[in-house]
Length: 144
Image 1: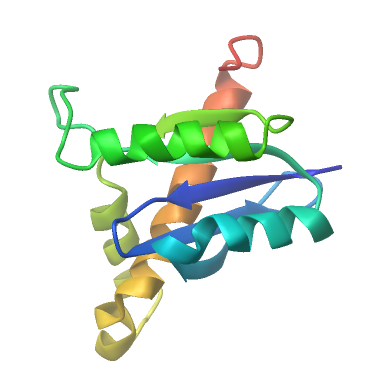
Image 2 (image 1 turned 120 degrees about the vertical axis):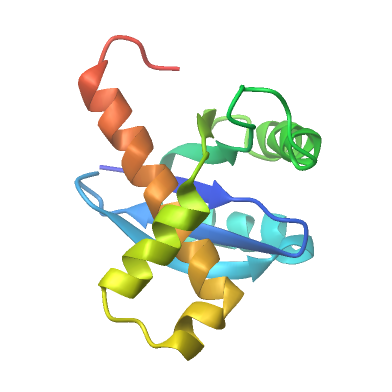
C-alpha cells in the first residue's frame, strides 16, 4: 500500500513526515531546505509509492490568511504540476508548532534538540499528517 506524505512548508526549511505502508502511523521523515524540496520529493517518490501529499495550510484563528498562506498555495500549485498523478490536500496546521514543541518536551527531548528548528519542523509535519489521517477516519466519504 502506498504511503501518505506530509509537508510543513517554510520559507527556509520544510519538515516532512510519512506514513508506514499500511497508513497506520505517521513518522517524521526529514527536514529539507525549501529550495531543495522539489528535487528531494522527486527522488523520494521515485523510490517510494506515495498515494497523496498533505500540505499544512497556515491560517489565523479566524481562518484568514497568514503571511505564509500565499507562499504555501503557490507551492501547492508547483506540487500539482510536478506530480500530476499524486493528489495534493491542504490541511489546517493551526497550533501544530506549539503542539510539536509540547510533544518534544513531554517526550523528554533535550533543550538543545528543541532549539534545533529542523526537529520542530519534522514533528510539526508528523502532527499535520496524523491529524489528516484522523480526519479521514472520522469522515471516510468526505475525502478532499
